[in-house]
Image (cartoon, rainbow, N blue to C red):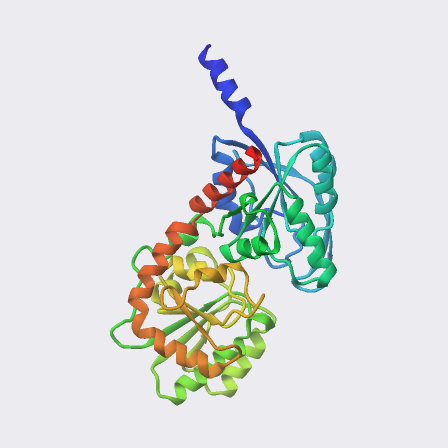
Length: 383
């Protein structure tokens, strides 16, 4: 066989995979590009350009990433709740008939996912859910429907082990599931430059918060904890990097508690502009709802403190926060417990930092997530 025919044969053997996604969300750029460059699959993203997440940035795709654009019809109910129908997604599935279709969910907010699921079954296309692997949130009927779709799927790419085990306990076949974890972009893993400064000699505890300021983030707990630490004559500073609807209220509370000398507000910062804050922090605090920002801290060698996990209080990334290994948890809605936890964590920052970097490298980089996704998809196709 000629070399040209061999190359064509190799291309023909590649698994055709379509990811049905909402938009090209910025923090997915590195992992999407890595998947698209992998020779084992022929990867296309079918998505829209209008994001239901009003404050999230999108990226502009470059080859070899292939995009099939459809139109998102979005109805925003609240800042974080919406319904979406993706016009053109069904037509694209009929035309492409991939080996594997990856859907987000099973998420009742994305209405078009469910007819796509049934159509894929009719077309004998393997279907995989890329999912938080949750069951609750929409009542007993919603739970039953989610479990139905998870059980009928050919595969599930779960964000963490907790979700995977939750579905296994509910009766989903374990062999269909793969834990893929989550990640940020490559640039976010370079911000510390391997020179993380921990437990500096002046014994000042440097606390950092990065992210949007929403009511669910419970920024009041961080401000109240700062007031408690100040009353105890603890030497510390709190840097708050971000904006959002609760920014004004958070500033007002800080001023009322006379914390202007120790709580500093810096506005929103992105990419390289975050370097100085990550390099100078000892502890990252996420008062509640600890998502991918936890990985951003730990990638810079910063242990994370957050509120104890009650039910669905946190996204899956909270599983990266391991007590006395990569961070700590404080008592639910207790500012005093948060203050105590900050003080107790500070002497252990150096050892916690080492564990943070190790865990991120093993599970939470674009390369690690890419490999887990592709292996999961290959497993689904072979089933």
